[in-house]
Image 1 (cartoon, helix red, strand yellow):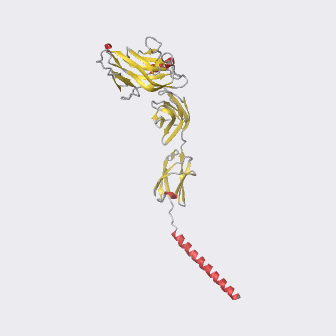
Image 2: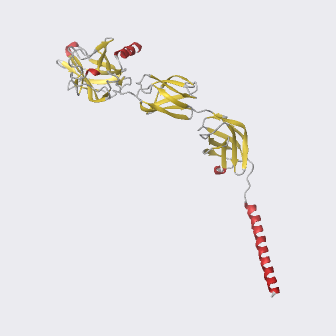
Image 3: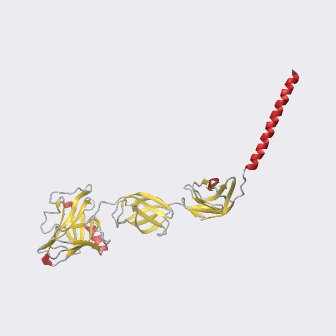
Length: 369
């Protein structure tokens, strides 16, 4: 019986040795199949400085063609976006939280650190805009940091992508002129690859029409009531031509539908005429005629001989007054225009129609324009 147990033990030992030898042979075969990769070399990178979000090109050799095997660190911060990868060049986007320091290139098991630092430039910051509500043509100040001092490096956009004219710039302040055609909403400052959204800016509810683009009536039109008058926009004016074959008088009302006004903030409405009508040109809307209790015409004053202004706080028909606490949308606003044929006037032109906070502001505008 004892010899039997010895025999079984020897068989077990033989089996174990056989398995171990086979395992070693398999491990040797596996190690022979593991690919080896050459040492990588980094010869340089450019640019040597930039903003978060910019692209850095790393040059060298033996990077291989498999971008998933590579990791690029900016002073320990992993870059998430490798945009181009070849055996000799890697293009990588500077991560948003990168800090100045050396680059580390890791490909498979190989690591190479650059001898030079990549300098992360400070990005722009916007603190505020003042005032945050202004009409087109007025100046506003944007405050913040890292704007730079080159007016050509920075672009300021108002809502709907309308570019503003930059008056001056330094590292902490940009002065811009509010552009025509923008809308209320956040402003945007672009510098190089940076595009930074700032605070919200508001356009006031204001009538502001310059007719400075040929063919663009900016929403105004005429109703000639069958009297044959026509209009066009050219030379910086809205131009109306009468039909001089009429027997007695011409009619060509100047109209805008669904016009917003805000007499509480911009009560003075002004219009610059060329060949102002001599027979009738009353300001009128769906509420009646402006300042209708005033004899001898309903305008409130004339400046420079051809700029007529109206105080919208005086109401219409003497009884219908517009809100002074919130904007009002009129179904229509029009100048009711008629002209005697006997005067020989062939028509009229309007250079602009604008709102102002006061008569004094209108006077200042006329003095400077």
